[in-house]
Image 1 (tube, each protein chain N blue to C red):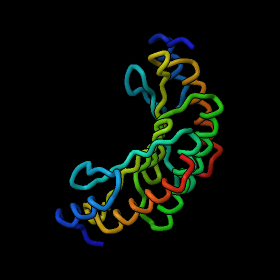
Image 2: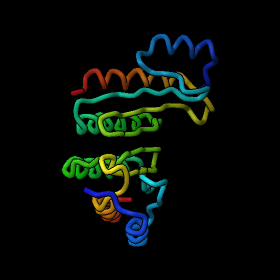
Image 3: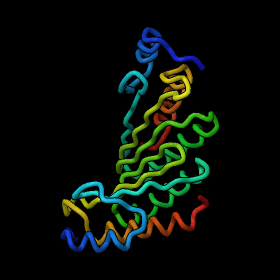
Image 4: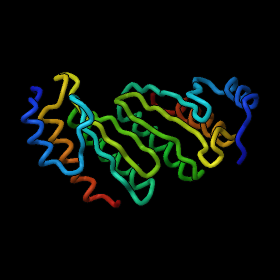
Length: 98
Length: 98
């Protein structure tokens, strides 16, 4: 999968709620939960999907805040797959018990 | 729970396999797994225990590497509970499918 150029990335970011660009290669979102184990369940859903797609975001759990960071290391930047997955993670969060 | 002093911490670190001191307040260990979902299962066990003890380590999942960082923010440093939990996490890892 090919790395997107700056123009393409800017367009994707416009359509992607609540994610921020960290640097050239990474985008990130922090998801807040009302309780710890809801965040952990969310992480399980993320992980299951990541394994299916063979594309694994960096995940951190800082009490009730789950942070996801995504990039395509093979493409050395951001690809369509990153944005497709980020959008899907947002949908999972919207359906989750927050 | 009271913050341990440097001498007490040094003694605890001697008995705790594979954790390293990050700074005054934190200890850390990286756990490696042969596959991604084994690491995720380990995180679930960590989280369940953390919630029971009402003491939550910082957890990150970077593909097959799970990193735990632990500290007692209320005590502004390291306590007996931190070392008790770190030891328990090591036991969980030793029993886990790595």
